[in-house]
Length: 313
Image: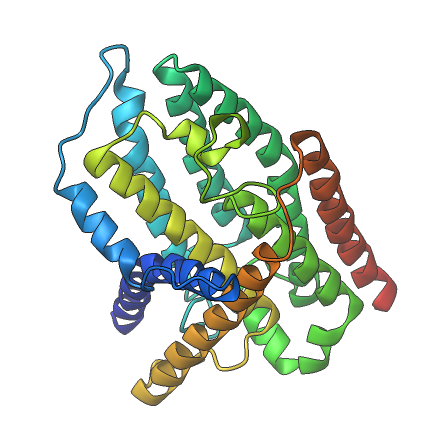
């Protein structure tokens, strides 16, 4: 029962921290660009405002349009409950693994693309088409980059991968880990709609990918989608932090270990958020036909990471 409570608590922490993570990146980007920017907690006010508004639904929309926000948010919460965030004791502590995570993330993206097509909006269809092009290249890369770690651990369970890395700290500096981390970081930018793949702050319809699919949403529906997108960013950063740099994560359920795990998790998120903010202030958005080239590079890096695990043995 204690393990289930620990999973529930770390899931609630992830859900609560996700909007603040997005707000922190926005605030830091503004400061790096010489602007004052909104406070890091501004997304919480925006969510409260959206949940207090009335949702406007097109008369041509079907049940897919209204169900998508709940599916997207629900899958993001479920993924947050099966990945190692604060605690990762040895054994089958987490109910999910690599393949469950990949398919759950794909399920939310699939429904979001259907919702973009559902209303018949030309921009929604354009965004859905672009999103499926990106996903076709990113999902295999996510799987391959974590498979490179799973091969060393002998299991696709996240707890086993974390334990293996902690037992052999030198493996974290090996070529396989470094290549897989680079591949997963590039995929994180693509999956979460960050620069240079997509611009999360733009409102120019011809350049949008993620935002084009949710143009028809408003009120609580839009709030759930924005919250789910923020939680998806947190999950990807948690995978990059705790699978490749698991130091500090709690291996037991003692209060002291959990407190240290929480502090280290927040510190890792902060470091990766700084890296994203610095990158987004230094690069411009790629032209659409150049995006597959970048994602192909990430796939090759993940493939090389898998190959290196056989060569190093």
